Image (cartoon, rainbow, N blue to C red; front, side):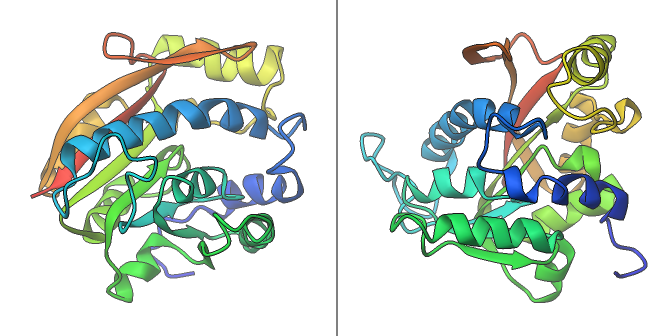
Length: 253
């Protein structure tokens, strides 16, 4: 691993332990919440891509609005987001530093012709930058709170975008509400994810993340909260409630 890498080996090991369970929402490894959140995340990506992708006009009525677009899923894990994006037309590359995760994602994707062409690589955003790879859309969902050196990681994400490319990020706000819900309730009381999955001190407030993106020549178009109840399939987007989970869309100048 490079000396200045943003990859935190301890964080990677947390998620490779779930490698066999990525496609078992009922497991006790915490992947169930990701499966719950995935439809609302894909809805957001679809809507914002229609509004902001400049490469080619997108038909908002098309079942494959991302057709012809090269999409990178950073920290892809077992491919939950990658497969959903492939099903709406994207040419997906998933990158993850955990070899077991990449193997799980590849194996599952091969089981469906709509996802069989997904490319999964055991690597990092940093390495893709070194290889001069660029994409129309870059997604880093539930990743930034698990990396070292956040400014460097965000710089890497922006370097991976084509001019006018679209970046999607989701993470957890550093607020008292997020401590009560994601640490105290979700980890220690309800045990929906293993204790220690999150570190409240590594959460990023919305203005902090927006500021880092703007330093790297990005224009932030939208920040929306993801609000819901893990025991009810009622997750929704909210412009007014970003105090816990939030997702944003930004474009490269």
